[in-house]
Image (cartoon, rainbow, N blue to C red):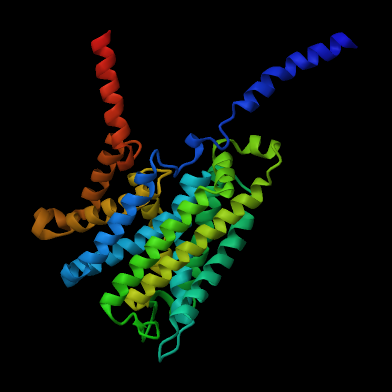
Length: 358
């Protein structure tokens, strides 16, 4: 009996040691935990203040472009919670973006609508959609999860494209933009500051979430879900909560886009929009909130420049080709995204120092 117990203990020892060394909630496993508090919070805050003070000096074109980038940044941040925070790669995230936009228009009246009511409608509609889709999708893993989310997004696309629910393929118009009190989104200046405020709030919310115990659990699931289950965590419900939160935030971005453009159509839910926002996250750097914003700026500016005849001449007629080549080059040169440039420089310095000492 003693020999048997000793043998069992010897067999369990390596497993216990491996379990103890699991990077469940270490600093490295936290995707958005910056190496410095200054980098994590102060730099984004300075950028937000700079954008606020720069508003009066933008031309109408630049102001509209900045608003577009900020809205898409909120969209990218919502996906970053899934991809970088939880390790869930979704190709159907545009569905929540479109549902939020459609809910805004459908909940409004010809005389307009209350901004808070329409925002709540977008949040509830996209959040409930994420709850239903996530409840089914999260029972799968890996490539199957990707395909199921894509299938649900295409289903949502065809519901609005092939029926009269949202005006069919032509879409539906928002006759009067939302307002509440003195905050009227008919004003481009109001749009600018309101969208900037939503971007700051979204960034701050996700930064707090990913630094909380809930965020630590998500990081553990991303690193090793099986070990988290063994530790007693109900990983399915954690993932579902993250999925719903990401969907609701995407709905907020959809609300802002509908209020900005005054029109929505089924193309917002098309699979290529899910692919584009995923590219934004990858270009900036998976696991970094700042990376999601920087990736959005990079993608939108590349798209804008490569489709402008004044910049690239006749190549602007083939901007999809040049954009694709540019993204391939960037991903090849920056495998960790733009946020990984600093790490690459440090590694090169270490290699040089190592070669000199050698």
